[in-house]
Image (cartoon, rainbow, N blue to C red; front, top):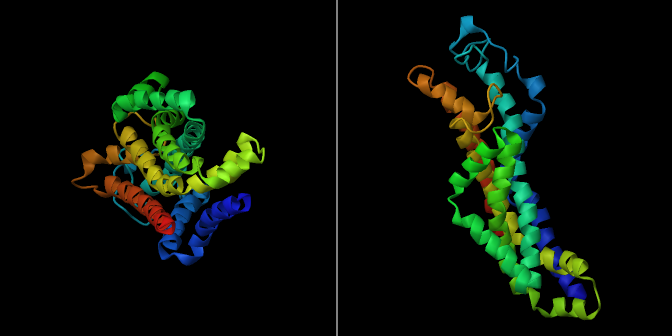
Length: 283
């Protein structure tokens, strides 16, 4: 029975590992996301100008050979700021998803496996968090902690762990009473080892499917709060803030808002394709 449990867990993991070579959606999605990550990593080499350097004489300049996407209202090179913004949006979007995913998965494992008072405490805490309107809670946390990347990540973590906890808990309840789990318990295995070797590999599939979509939501959330002036403070380059800054000039310099929006769209498309491929692998 124990060997069967390990085989089931390895089957889920192996299906995920085979995706990049066997799924067109996964290959395209990974390619898009990898391109954005490489742009962020090599931003100092790719950006032709300092993203913070102001040139008031050439403010709101049209695209040209010197400035491929023109300049903003302060004369800063839009193309350089677009590239450097990837160094802000991508890491914060990932951290704002991975941290709640780790916390929620751990709490979901505990709630589903131990049940009783452990389950009651975790799920009632989740109910309290969900009782608050999502965006109101995030805004309140950002205002309380102040603007910045840390505040955004903390706010997303406080809010988003609930979804992962509920998802994993449901899966664990379905696995908890299966024969191979009872066999591992009868064999005297420790609880952490049972969770790690026999429960976790068999319940993580749906979480992996949900993760890419949640990264999209976190990235959009960061852009939305920056658009409203509650996210990353100026003068740091950030896609949402760039969209907000270009909004008054949509009539003539439409690219100032459109291009950052297209960057968010492209990055989200790549993540969505990865999520679709992972979902197909679970069927």
